[in-house]
Length: 53
Image (cartoon, rainbow, N blue to C red; front, side, top):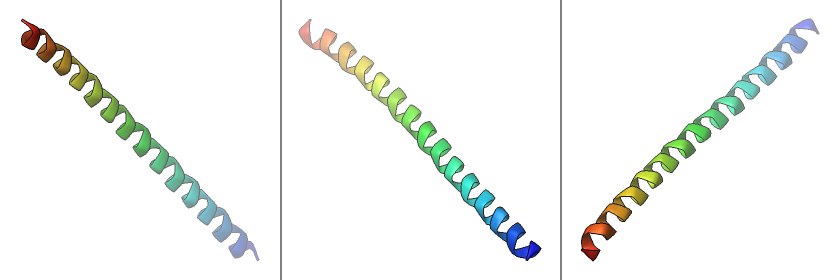
């Protein structure tokens, strides 16, 4: 019975670690996409200045 409890606790720990890893990856990906969007906005503003002149 003790083995079953340890196995369940270990499996729950692995599940929590996987969920945390997925959340961390999603957060980092979101930050990278946001940085790319900011760069694109700067490029668009730069292009608009040159097109209008």
